[in-house]
Image 1 (tube, rainbow, N blue to C red):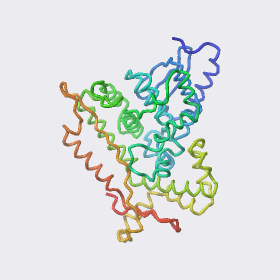
Image 2 (cartoon, rainbow, N blue to C red):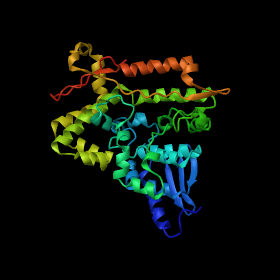
Image 3 (cartoon, helix red, strand yellow):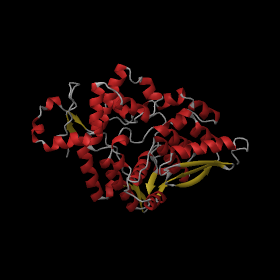
Image 4 (cartoon, rainbow, N blue to C red):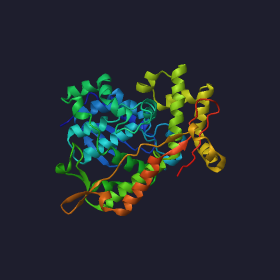
Length: 389
């Protein structure tokens, strides 16, 4: 089927040029348009998409907005050299396209592909900072953007696109099972923890068995134990590097405080933060503010390493009145892939003692948490990591 007529080729060329400009880094994702369809290249491979629904969804403003929302939120601005070994710029758009391509390349149904493409469309600026703002960093099974996804699709024109192509919000709003697999693999690639060849070999070993799925989309397994081990070990490495590191909690907590203050004094309108602003816009407003509370919070975010290191070196901080401190433990997200052993499908951690030991050790550290003085806004705001494992 030919998706595009000759008439809109100029428009499509410009659209393709726009993508090339935005992704002028090492191009995690590239999208080009031609008469035979939409050409998509990701770390998983290349494919040509001819279904009109995907052109409409990728082109819609709500999806385009994700180009300006970084995958790692405020961490992007203060940890780029650690998070991206090769100068990448990883966005929620990149992640969404990569996850879609993973489902596409593995031959999953259109509704699963649509779910993968749209699963992060409701992210606010700074992504998971919204969990700290609106959920108090509570350990729920869903994140803020998941809680508001259906309303977002309805209110931002996406539902109309779905209905045009005979899909409903309920059909495509399930959480994609491979979400964690994708950001582990691509995040590991960008951090230099895995090669492109290793990534593709892992994906080649991944398969789907309908009878294994207790819920839709959960029948994924690896054909070999080695691949499952590689994925889990890569996951542990990447979350230690980023999401579950003590510095990450500091950065997110004080970004939250800066935003709350910015909302209160009108530097940023909350509805703009949630629906319209890019990460760069928000970061500029915060870093250029002369408000002393915002300035102090931003200083802690930017110089978080010095604050944490000074606290570790100064033993007297271990005697701080703990009533003034808060135990902060990031949400530990489970990852225990199935492995096919003969005719059986078995969770890796049931059969691999060494990996289970490493996994449970890190899980215990994360769930125990870090003792951090988050202070009440009596300047100067201090941040101490007292028992950072």
